[in-house]
Image 1 (cartoon, rainbow, N blue to C red):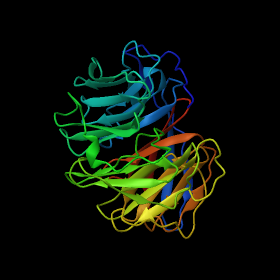
Image 2 (image 1 turned 90 degrees about the horizontal axis):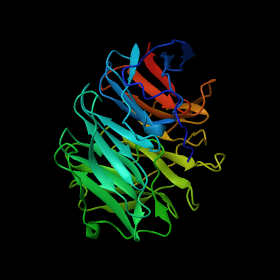
Image 3 (image 1 turned 60 degrees about the horizontal axis):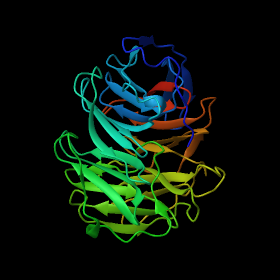
Image 4 (image 1 turned 90 degrees about the vertical axis):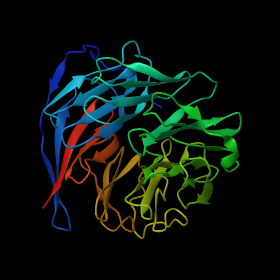
Amino acid sequence: MVRDRPHGCYYDNARFMIRIIPLFISLAFSQSISLQKMDSGVEASFRGLSVVNQKVVWVSGTGGTVLRTVNGGESWKNVSVPNMEKTDFRDVEGFDKNTAIVMGIASPARFYKTTDGGQNWNLVHYDNREGVFYDGMSFWNRKNGISFSDPIDGHHLLIRTTDGGESWQEIPKDGFPKKLDPEFGFAASGTGIPVQGRQTVWLGMGGKKSRVFKSEDGGLNWYATETPVVHGGQSTGIYSMAFKNKKVGIAVGGDYINQSVKNTMAYTNDGGATWHLPEKQTHQYRECVAHYRGNIFFAVGPSGFDMTTDNGKNWHPHYWEVKDLTAVAFAKGSSIGYVVGKKGQIYKIKVGH
């Protein structure tokens, strides 16, 4: 993966003002999408994105970079973790304007937590085992969360927390299906491990097969289902998943090396027991998928946006001049969302009539 180093991103009190460039796309279902481009003030490659609500958003990426807004993107404050210039924070989980956890991916992998809006960061997880590479994390609530890494010593590695990320424990391996060779996850946007309810969690994998794993007891016991998403290579598979409830979900991915491969999307209507290729898809490499509302999902990647209005059965491309996007997320119950990408890109997205 590319590791960009941000410029001037360690001035803790710096605030970066928004620069708005609206882009409008008319949709077939009589709605429009508007994008507002924001000036992040850094050149980091962002992959971590957590939209707490319309006002509070956390963003993380290369060079140890962490940004936060508390006013809907009117200004962004650089709250990067000190002395972590060589760390890539591929995922961030924000709980409110003061509390967040960032996930550093590679050995040594480091998770940091702040409870004062990024003024101070505490190391809450450290793993220096050879081969460790954390791909994503999710939380059911403020206390209970789960994270996964690429396999270690021939076994899948998952950890969980029950105290809001203050401490993490490895989940016993005996409840997880045998690993295929090869089989691994992807840290494209930290969204390969969605959760629902109190204990349901899915996990997207790639390699020999593109499998989805599901647990309904908080990650202790799992079963695996094969999907038709492209597979068979060292970089093919599922990069991101999103569920709107315990039944309806979408998996996206492809191959970040060969981005022209086909069959990069699949959908399920039965909680992941079976997966289907869309009737119409864009055959584009996608790094993140997110549920908006109703039957609408968005997916993003290097070539732009895709949208479905029927739970993933049909996808429509939106190839704007906006490229190299990595993650998208929406505020719960809102028409407002955010999109991030490489070279410090942050956009505010609004869907409306």
